[in-house]
Image (cartoon, rainbow, N blue to C red; front, side, top):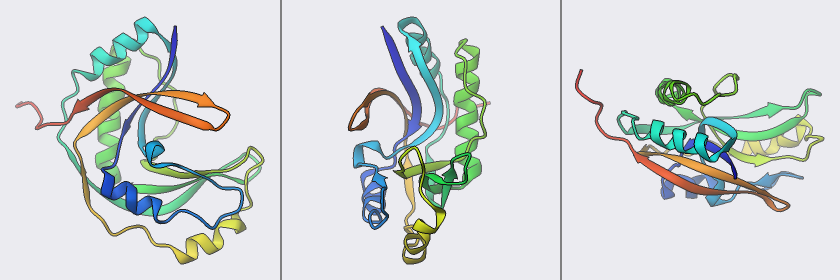
Length: 186
């Protein structure tokens, strides 16, 4: 049996509620639900049972302190034709999230788990658009009317999720939650 997996941070309920309150008012946007709001640290793709077990064992060795985060600016990912495919909000401090993602990646690579090589961008996806994308101009009003929530929050765990793709969108099921604690003494 295969599993489509990713490792992510899940903002606490208060932070997710603040993001949900921002959503709406953009044609063709498929807004993320509360259950879908997360920041991917490592996308693993489809793995077999043995690889999934190796991922869980590697994550169990993760040593990192909880992160105190906030929201940064809005931004987008574009299609090759310059259309918007994804609307997202950044996480700050970016360096802290990137350092945690790097720790996770090193553990997974050491366990023999192949990872895609793409630039890491600390963010939470807010909306996705059809395959054709959306014109950047369709977001002008949204970006002009909304500001990132001025809210600090602590993320105290890393979660391994399994992604189930359906006609109605992706459904994410937590498989393993790894608490973040004080780093081990040197």
